[in-house]
Every structure is written in structure tokens, then in C-alpha cells.
Image (cartoon, rainbow, N blue to C red; front, top):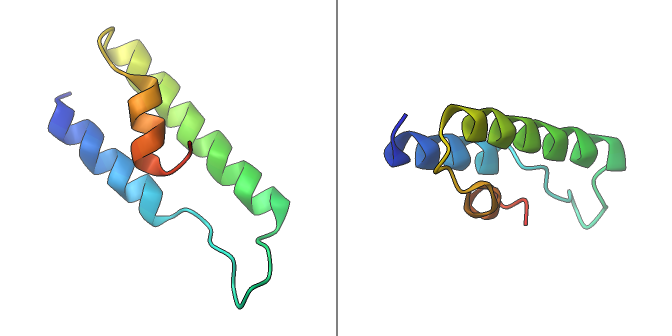
Length: 64
């Protein structure tokens, strides 16, 4: 995979990040699920490419 692929994946994950609705906090379970998904994708991409920067990817997803 290329850097372009990683950017595309991060953008898609960021798009699905839960946001508070009408000033109410998002249920913690939904946020935890999203964070676990992002972390799992980052781990899989890191296994695929030794030069993959998981911290940078997580930041691009909005997880950091």
C-alpha cells in the first residue's frame, strides 16, 4: 500500500468519527468502538508496512 492509500483510509475513518449531537455527549460505548476500530486498522497497516507511522495515522483519523 502507498501513502495515498493510508491517507484515504484515515480520511474515511475520520469521517465516521462520532460527534456530539445537540450538545449531548456521544455514548461512551460508541466512541470506544470507533477508537478500537481505528486502532485495529492502524495495527493491521503497521504489520503490512514496517515504515508505517501509526501515530501520524491516528492523528489523521482524529483519534489523537
